[in-house]
Amino acid sequence: MKRRIIQTTIICILFLFALNKINAQVTIGSGVPAAKGAILEIKSKEAYNNNITSDKGGLGLPRVMLRDRTTLEPFISTTDHDWTNKGNTKIDRKHTGLVVYNLYESPSSVTDYNKIFHKGVYIWDGEKWNIESFNQKRYFYLPTFNIQLKETGTKKTFNLYEE
Picture 1 (cartoon, rainbow, N blue to C red):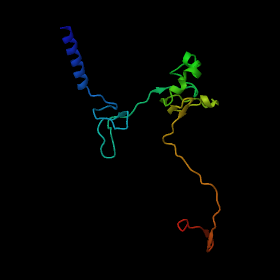
Picture 2 (picture 1 turned 135 degrees about the vertical axis):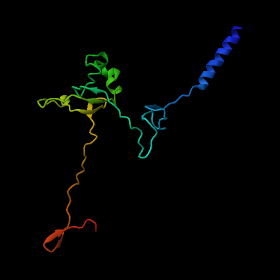
Picture 3 (picture 1 turned 180 degrees about the vertical axis):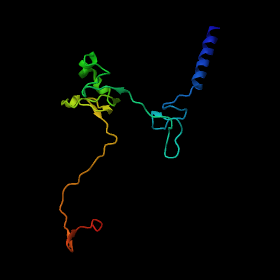
Picture 4 (picture 1 turned 90 degrees about the vertical axis):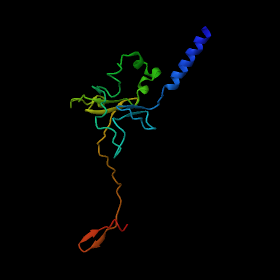
């Protein structure tokens, strides 16, 4: 009798496991499955038109007041045992990729680079906080070189399309 109860229990447990659907990818905001290559996807609906997946909102990052580029404060105090022994615990490296939105704007009188902060998104690289400049224009300056100019009347010109 006892053996039959154990067998029935095991069969029931196996049956329950067979009914469970296990997903490796997770979607937050809708029941729509995540893309194959994504571990986590935030969307309120299936992609349409120009791959738009939400019309309800965006990602709200944690808002913090950073004070020093070289520490993980306010999350981990510089007096914390793991931080004072970071050579052994590697606590600074374990937080690489941490993303926050900084609300602190340092006064203009601050001259120490590690204490200068502006409002914006910061990413911890394992050693320090770096501001992410999403809208910053990036320029590439060409090196100087000589061009032979042709005289056309009183002007000197160079036609790039011919070259």
